Amino acid sequence: MIDLRSDTVTKPTEEMRKAMYEAEVGDDVYGEDPTVRLLEEKAADILGKEAALLVTSGTQGNQIAVLTHCRPGQEIILEAESHIFYYESGAVAALGGVQTRTIAGVRGAMNPESVKNAIRGVDIHYPVTGLISIENTHNRAGGAVVPVENMKEIYEIAKANQVPVHIDGARLFNAAEGAGVEVKDFAQYADTVQFCLSKGLGAPVGSIIAGSKEFIHSARKWRKMLGGGMRQAGIIAAPGLIALTKMKDRLGEDHANARKLAEEIDNIDGLRVENKVETNIVVVDVKELGVNSEEFVAHLYSEGVLAGGFGPTSVRFVTNFDVSDAQLEDAIAAILIAAKKCK
Image 1 (cartoon, rainbow, N blue to C red):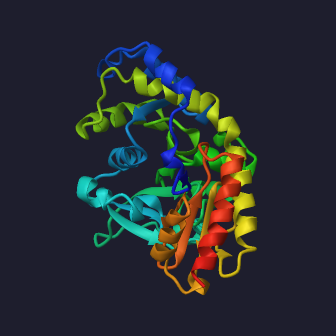
Image 2 (cartoon, one colour):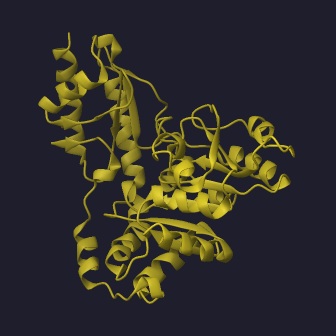
């Protein structure tokens, strides 16, 4: 099967597996795992932050950020289809007692003026605005890159109102590659950042959150409270180091494959690419075929391709390290056959 459901399906490379086996380890809850410490220091340096913390997942990283920044009864401003709002099981409410205030964006980017107007004034009827969150790249916007200029405007508004900013940067390195900038160019316009070592970077597990030393000190306790304290975590950090230092440099290959995939799909009768392909995600509308997304995904499966439903008539394809150029060609041929079967 050619798996285009997500970049989360990538398997660790042989170099990663060897690094896991050979990793120098210690008890990370005591701060004694040298490989974890090295990963955290490297991540902080790349992002231009004072400190970083290894966590088990992007969702855990986002939730730790919300819990560290906010108090119960406060409010977080975020884009209406952001991952924190859409895909994290209502955790900000369940765990933090924090409510969400959503703003409809354009390709994942919130209008800075709308963000400014959403920040609560001083009134006993209102919750306090505790955090502004920006997702980059934006998953449900088809892997769209939120421009640096947009982030800068929102950050300046936030600072003027003493509100912290968090980046849900699960695919932030894809955003940097897509925009042709360094990740620091995005990270400088946020107080805290979360990014995944898995997904396009290919590590088997783990995410990083980064910010000031004071923030990470508090975040470490929240990680422990959420059951995220790890012991000999160097075996996780070792492949993370390879992801961070080597795999980020090949993300352009995934982006090129996604553009090729989109171009070929646009030439297939009955299929229409919905998104502007900037990174590694292609969203395709299948309604002209007279089927829904679930039915088309089933047709693809029968032809040896795995994809994911992304709405009633939308199907998502995500290019990744484990899909070769030859497999991409085979996938395009299979998509054509699946489309013909629907007619």
